[in-house]
Amino acid sequence: IFNTVFMYKPLSGAPVSYSDYFKKGNTKLHLIGILGGVIWCIGMVLNTIAAGKAGYAISYGLGQGATMVAALWGVFIWKEFKNAPKGTNSLITLMFLLFLSGLTLIILAKI
Image 1: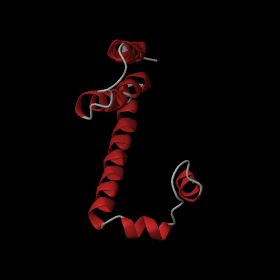
Image 2: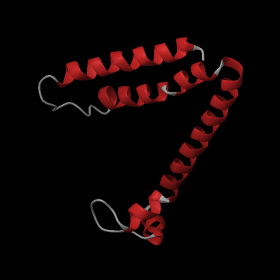
Image 3: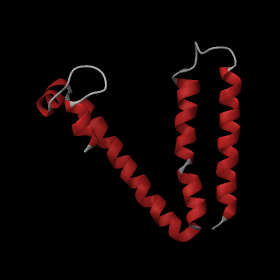
Image 4: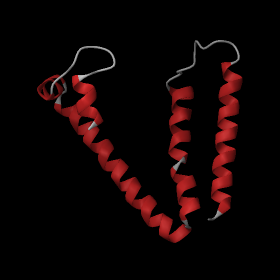
C-alpha cells in the first residue's frame, strides 16, 4: 500500500507510475529485488521455526541482529558517516554498545 502511495505522491522528486517502474528498471535489477524477497522469506520462516524450538526471546533477539548487521555495513562498508561532525564516532560506538547490550538482555530473558 505504501509503495503505491509514495509512487504517486512522493516526498521528493516527480511521481512515477507502475509502467515507469518496469520501463526504467532492467531484468537484472528486478531479479535482484525478487532474490532479496526470497532470502527475506526464508529467513522469516526459519526464525518462526526457531521460535518454537529455542523460545521467542532468543529467536527475536537473534532476528534483531539483522539490524546490527545493517548498521555495521552502513558504518564500515558504505562509510555513511565519513564526513560527519566531530563527536559522531563516539555516539555511533555508544549506539553499538547499547544495541548489543539490549539484544543480550533480550536473549537472556528467555521469556
